[in-house]
Length: 458
Figure 1: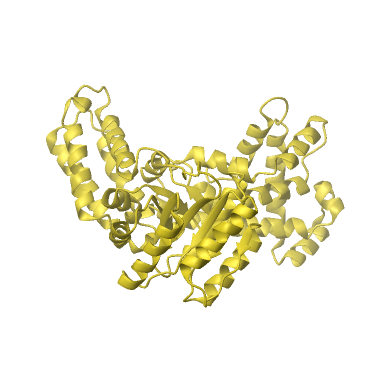
Figure 2: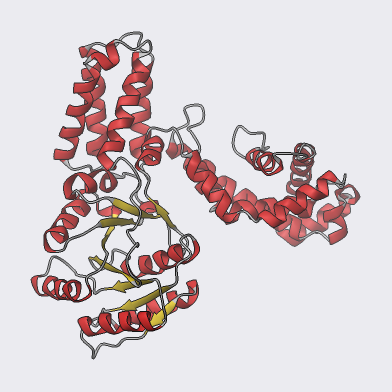
């Protein structure tokens, strides 16, 4: 997300950062570039005008003129205004109600609403330690009920059955009664998707809302629809007392216009971003972190949180203990490290959260990510084609063994040699993983696989 905007803004702001002094003239040129970058990202025109006006007002005032580094001060202003545009801080779900807390999900058909219900159920179960019941009040699409049942089983939450012969209000009320009997914390009510702003369907969801009085009414919207997403959200907001927005399909949106428009147009906070198809691909929305990513500064806090949630701490500590005892870092350990990176969403997921490297733009980084993902898969296949003795003692791998391993993994002999060479580099680094900070050192070791971090190219 934001690749195009990040590339354009990074170039523009890099130019102004080098200025010894900012004048109205060079601010005017830079603001014109910022304005064009936002419009190309499909940000709504009124939002762009307001944003550029606020940046200009602050930039030509005393805030920049008194700074020793006016260019950097200008970048800081742009970042601050981006944060203000998207909401000053993350807004959590308001679930501090008498159980069960009811959450109503609304949105257009095709926005990924039912999938998002499953993701949110998993998020609440795993991250918030809540018991969750999900129910579908979509009587027009039987497949939606079956889809939600499958998702509930996948993420391990309670599913309340319903069918097309029932009324949406009755379904929702019955599910809430069931949740009370089972002492469930949260009920997620999925509703029928609309093809457009349909009066009859709006009246139906208004009736459901009035009957169940949810603590949260979330609008699910496809981020790839750009500024139309904000306009649709406003139409729903006029009909329902929305409490927040979830942007879906964010991983497929290189522009990011929806994220920058929704809050300003609707006045409702973005609470989550859907980052992929998997059930764990739902991230809380942090305006400050997103602003950093837009400006090519990375999002290290989210990267750390991702590591804490996905890294197998027990396996990592076992490896640390093994190294402390003087035992070597073998190829089985190396394969474990590759698998740990996969559990964090792969190389691409990590790279997009790191600060820009040496002026490389994100479109170029996309090629690097694709190549790296293929390399890691190839490396894992090569290690899997080795015997246990070879993985534990790579020194015994002779030329004939390399040919056998290459044949078994569908690679070339030189590819096998490169994996062994990379393992030796990693082995040297892992010898430093002793005493305090073992986990942190291990993460730095994994970081050596990033471009510029010492990983030889295939």
